[in-house]
Amino acid sequence: MRVRVGVLGAGSISAYHIRGLQDAGAAVVALFSRDGERVQAEARRHGVPMATTRYQDILDRRDIDAVVIATPDFTHAPMAVDAARAGKAILLQKPMARNRAECLEIIAAAEHAGVLLCVSFMHRYFPEIETIRRLLAEQVLGSLAMVSQRNATPGADWAAWFYRKDQAAGGVVMQLGSHGIDLLRYLFGEIRAVQATTARTVHERTIREGRVVVPELEDVALALYTFDSGLRGVHEMCYAERAGTDRFRLEIYGTRGTAWLRTERGPLAVHRDSGWVAPEIVPEDVGLRQHRRWLAMVRGEAPPDRSAHDGLAAVVIAEAIYRAAETHAEEIIR
Image (cartoon, rainbow, N blue to C red; front, side):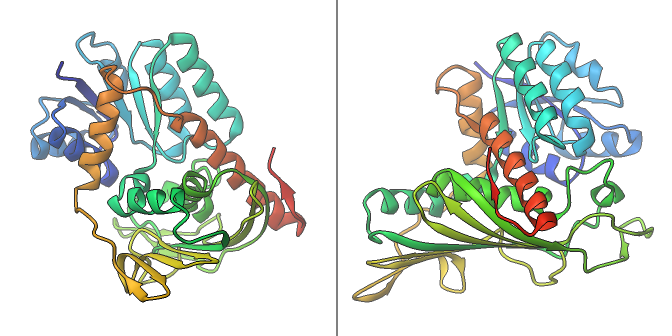
């Protein structure tokens, strides 16, 4: 079965999804954006036969099996609910929604309609993550003492909505930190408590169209996590650093060894008694890996993952970070 997919959104992240889906063998047959010129141009660039400024046109097509929703945060809940009611399998770009209530609304709609709902956490699909998960399961590093993760970019410059409280789920914590939150939970288990501080350090930004935007949201955050296992984790998030990180930087410290991921030592390096060693990593395109897995779930060839509930968890933890920064007290994750 060749899955037929409609993509809602024609921004930069949509191009990642379209290429990944096409490489994985899906037929991307329709593209939506409210910007008519942009959607026509992107459809031509990727060879997508239908371009529309009404997403309902895509949902109304019975020959479309699934949709990717890669639109601004404030549209996620209404579009995902409509897609579920239309019987489409859904891959929803992170952050899942603007808050816990919207996430729960989406999950309820998908469960009621009996459709597959997944949230896109692309960092899980880097080959080095697969390798470090195996090494952690084998306890190669011994008992873990601490983890440190850094997510940093100069900040989004492609749209003003990223910096508006009423349209974005949040600042750097929601937009970039949600990747890190998910990856830490994916590797190390549940986060049960957080202490945090946040700040807005850039007070004017110029987006690509040349307009000056006054940000309303944080661009720096530091979080200290306590996991259910007792492990402590440090999470640095920055939307104001020109060099940034290569997706993420992750350091894992254990009683028998250390592992660094996506650092100056390469995708993965492990230090034990004999010094630093770089385990063999078989390179494979992340978009291909992620979308091949999702399409297998859509076809019923692989069991559904828990990424929808993980998407909810990432939003819940992000909200706890905001509360902890405001109260200057530890927040218990509920």
